Length: 352
Image (cartoon, rainbow, N blue to C red):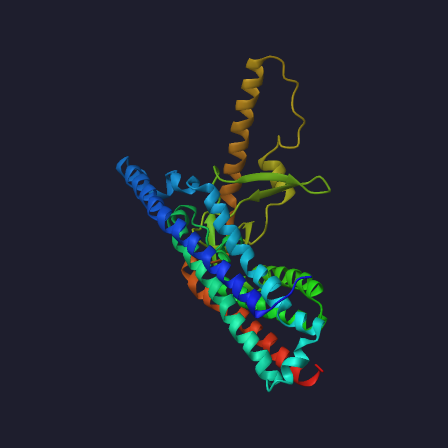
């Protein structure tokens, strides 16, 4: 059975602190090397007359296993805190009945609860915050190249928002333990609840912390463009969002000046050969000639579309990254406070 005690918590806290120290030393040793690789590649690129954004900087593939490990730790440590610190915190004492003994030894139920929530909650936030800040510092030269730290996949791995995640996961675990009075069910519900909360905030709430920016871009004929067929067989034109460094893209669409998407009739006229079956190719020279003709026809098709249509992109610019970090951290801290308040009410009114 998974149990929680102050001795166990101290042991786990010491192990966690030792792990943070070891990781910190590794990052401190390898971090300057990443900066050196980034600066050297950037200087070589500029010396050859290239733009920094067009250079293939090898820093993105340096210490690839350490990159995966560091990202995974920032991702999973908050939920582990909720499952192994939060869920057993109260559930274990309710399972064994030891909370009644504590209340008979001149310890009020409020002091019993608040000490637990306060001390372990602060430790949870400290672990999540320190881990994230170390990884954010180490990742800084990589982030300069990838320019995607505002993306849904990267945002929660940077800055100080993982401290809010860790605090929320702990509060969620403590609350589920109080309600279920069993450690294992509380751990399972904490895991599911934390994942659901992260997805809801990332997908529905975060993009609307501030009014997004809407901007028009021309379609790049050499960019990520293509076609798909609807269930009815009609053509649909697709274009990937333009490169907006460190932006959180909320939506993008291809429209004309009348805000209309390319119709199937227009696509058939602009690209008459797209729905035709491939010709019977015999011989390598014939195959090469048909392939070259097909490529030219495709490029002409995209060029025709790009003269009449453009992309409209709604996004949060990268300059708002730290403001969004603050908003999301405050949101999860507020949720944690609400859960703690619920625990206080439940212990005072319902727990006996």
